[in-house]
Length: 209
Length: 209
DNA sequence: TGTGGAAGTAAACGGTCGTTTACATTATGG
DNA sequence: CCATAATGTAAACGACCGTTTACTTCCACA
Image (spheres, chains in turn yellow, red, brown, orange):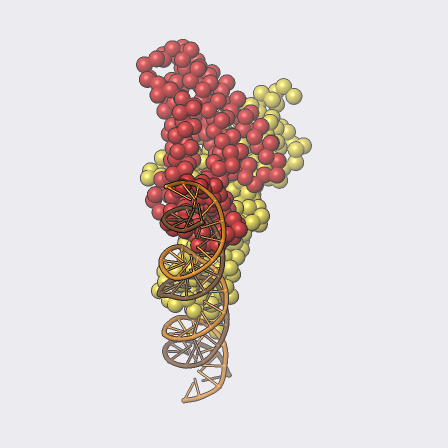
C-alpha cells in the first residue's frame, strides 16, 4: 500500500493553478483532469469532491503559513522594553519581514497562486472574505500596527498603512506587469525609505518622551 | 413605442451586483432573472446573450468614467510652467482628486461593484487584465506619476506609489471592514499627510534647481 | 375598435456540470 | 502465484447551463 503520493499532489497543484486563474466555480472537474491527462473519475480516488480539493488547498496554505511563521520569529515583544536599540532592531526586522513577505506573495509559486485564488473568492460569503482579510488585508495591517506600536512609533495604524500599502499595491501591479523586476526593485526602494523614515520618527519620539 | 427603459436597466444593475459577488461564470442567467422576479426568457428580449450584459456593463463604466473625467478636469499640463505656485496648485488638485477617487470606488454603488467585478475577472485573459490595470492598477499609478513629474516632484514613480498605494489598500480593507467610516477617515488623513510631504519635497527641489 | 409590436412565460434544445457506478489494469506482499 | 488493494477508464446519472422557440398578454395608436 501507500504507493501513490504523487498524483494527489499534482491534482492539488493543478487545481490551484486553475482556481487562481478562473475562480473556483469557473473551473470544472473535467478541466482539472484534462490538464493532468487523466479522466475525471480518477480525481475521485483522491478527493471526495471538488470542494474537498479546494479545502485541501486552504489547509495546505495554513500549514505553509505556520511553518514560515516559525522560521521568521518576529518577537511577541512586550511594550516594556522601550530602549532605542530594541526599537531600531524591531524596525529592521519589520523591513526585512516586509521584503521577504513581498517576495513570498509574488515569486513563490504556491503562495502567488493562492493569493490570486483568494482574491477571486473574497466576496463569496463571509468565510472567504475573512480569509482574504486575514492573509492579505487587515491581517498583515493589524500585525504591523502592533509591531510599530511596540517599537514606539507614534500613530502606528497610520504608519502601518503607509508601510504595508505599497507592497499590497505592487503585488497587483506585479501580476499584470511585463517588467516584474522593476516592480520588485521599486518595492525594495520604498521599504528602504520607510526604514529610514520610521527610525527618524521613533528617535524623535524617544528623545521627547 | 419606447415604453420600457426600466427593465433593461434593472437587469444590468442586478447582473453587476451578482457578477461583483460571485464572478461572471458563477452567475447564471436564471439567477439574474430570479433576482428580478421574472423568467430567464425575458432577459433575452433586452440582451442578446449573457456576455452582452457583461459588455454593456463595461460600456456603461466607460461612459461614466468619461463623464467624471470631464467634471474633474485635471490639467494636461505642460512641463514648461514650473513656478512654485503652479506646482502647489497641481499638488492640491492631486490630493483632492485622490479623495474624490477613493470615495468614488468605495461609496458609489455602481463603481464599487464594478471594481469588485473587475477584481474577480482580472486573471481571465489579457483583455480583462488590461482593464483591471487601466482602472485600478498601473493606470492610476502611471497617471499620478505623470502629474507628480509635471509638478516637479523628484522620483515621481516612487512618490506616486506612496501616494496611491494607501487608497488602493484601503479600498480592499473597506470592503471587509465593519467600521467603514474609520477606513474613510484614515484615507483622508494619509492623503493630507502626503499633501504636506509632497509640498515640502517640491519646495526643496524647486529652490535647489 | 381593431392591429401590431413589445414584454413575458413555459417548455424544450443540446451540452456540460459534479458525482456515482461497474469494470479493467496494475502492483505488491504473504 | 495468487489474493488484494490501489489506481484508472468509460459510461451513465440527474441537474443545471445558455439559448431558442412557440405561445400568451397587453397596451399604444390609426
